[in-house]
Length: 193
Length: 305
Image (cartoon, rainbow over all chains, first blue to last red; front, side):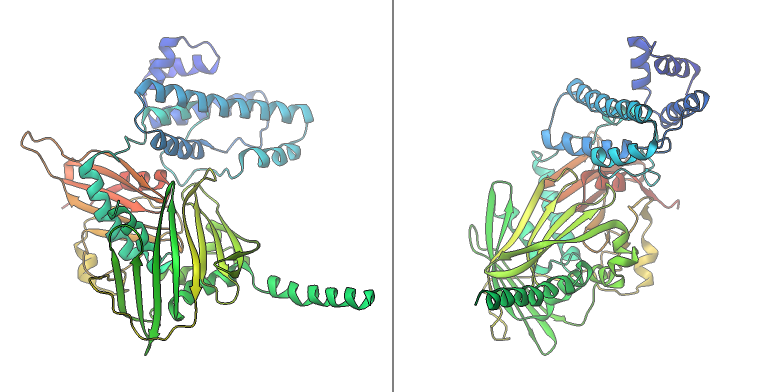
């Protein structure tokens, strides 16, 4: 990561980033940026002496999972539409976090907060397991910059390959998924379409 | 009279309640993993995928310790499959993972899923217990299973994505447990082979030069015969995913003919990634979230030769 990007990042942190700077950060999709962004937030919180029960948490993996699913459902959207929807999701997540931390200040207790959060976010886990998902909330818009790829359902070749693989996969899966022979309905129903 | 009625009602409650609570989620799940292989039955089962519904007749018998199984499609083209000669005592890794621990252990399978008895229901005219199985991380799908109270047979299965949407549903609509144990003759049926025999073939392990650097915790590789270098399969007990590797096809212009991307159908997804520097492409197929398939596919690495 070069110094220009680092400066832009800290400008964004202070809410003073120009559109150009924002674009610079978004196009330089790097692991280092995500880590830096998370570190910046952490150190700022330490400076302000704020303790936050979610400090070590990373919900970006869950957000990425949802985005990956959404994208494939909606099929081939254009680049900017995807980017916009990514930003929208990231913004709403950020809003939840902001409201969340306001809540914890208002109620002056972190126990309350944990209980509240359970209702909102369901299952959120630190994402150490996922190498692709380190970083702060706002940067999770980056997930959109490297989309889950196009849905190839309309590609005849890809579809044929999928059918062949699914059959081979079912030979392996049928006796390991607790369902047995019924699993082959997945293959048969596809071929008779 | 009223007292007697009340007493009878109370007795009925006392008798019926333990029947329900005696079996925990993990016991029921254990039963599910072997009952479908040990019993003689014939059933009509529907498979629903979005707007599309197809139906099948499934016949399963055990004779002299060998299984026979047939799946006949009842609508559309004739597509019949049979499977026979499978030793009923042959235990596969998936069921093994489920049987290894109890829900209280918080180990193995139960580290990755929350299993709860949700209630009772009725499927195919039979009393069923409904199990809700929720993944604890983002790399697995959820399941809502209705198991036959008497036998543990899986009568209905809904596979649910992380957002709670049902992706596909299997449901028995008729079940007959009183059938003779002789094998059916199904004309023109395709014989299927299960390919996950636990054979320790060092040669097969040796020639594989690729491996995923990341798979979600709790997924165990199956040892398999044949296809040694072309495929690997992993299971966590319920979810199964396979990684297939093939040489890249290059067109005349030298461009790679494989496009990176995903495919989805019901609960099954695939994700393909090309590795031009190795001259190969990999496809991950399985009943897992797209994110899992993608991350596994992208994590593949080749040994330096």
